[in-house]
Image (cartoon, rainbow, N blue to C red; front, side, top):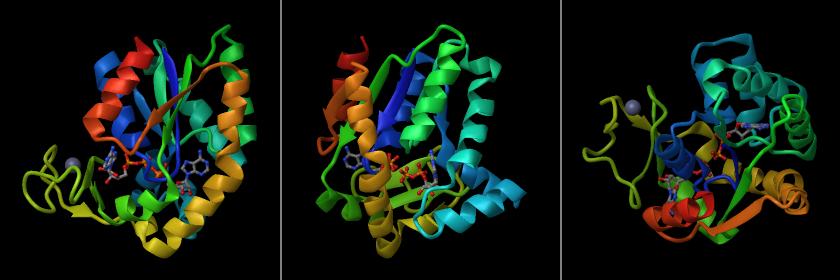
Length: 213
Ligand code: ADP
Ligand code: ADP
Ligand code: ZN
């Protein structure tokens, strides 16, 4: 099964993608996580990506597409995957479609996690991320057992550089300009599914499971 998560920054794509991945035994692929891992390791790719991410802009398609195609070609993707944060532009979606078509395959579902802009800034200011394993929490809606400590690995939780309110505003306008058109793109392909992302995390996941079954 191949699933794409669509939605504004902070809509809950990552939170739900992780649950889908563990429920259905497929890898969770987040281009944002791949970029952040590269930034941490100070790779040339990481340095280049960071210059865009810090401003709330998209990393150029050319670079992003290459990373994604490498990742989905790996063995663990044989039975499918859930993509979180890719595609973010129409050209990225077209490249993905071509890549899966080459193997006579298709994307099964594009799930749009719908959350209005008003809720987003609030969500993002409470987001905390593990420095080590990338687990995500929310101070109010998904708090770790011990404040600022990752439940999964015990490392410290931080606020992402690009979750500052000024950067979030940029990311939202980039989302509306460049990414939201993908909703129509997948609707036209007949695979768009919509969920109300303002509901509780568990309720959103139930709605998604009902779509995927
Ligand atoms: P995205 O991957 O779309 O940017 P995340 O999954 O990282 O979004 O979620 C953004 C923040 O909102 C995180 O702190 C997360 O814990 C929290 N969150 C996710 N889903 C919900 C929800 N349904 N209700 C409240 N908070 C949520
Ligand atoms: P969020 O979960 O809040 O939506 P991500 O972790 O998916 O954020 O992405 C963080 C940043 O990484 C984006 O703002 C963008 O700069 C970059 N990025 C991630 N995925 C892509 C992509 N598919 N195309 C271009 N840039 C991307
Ligand atoms: Zn951790």
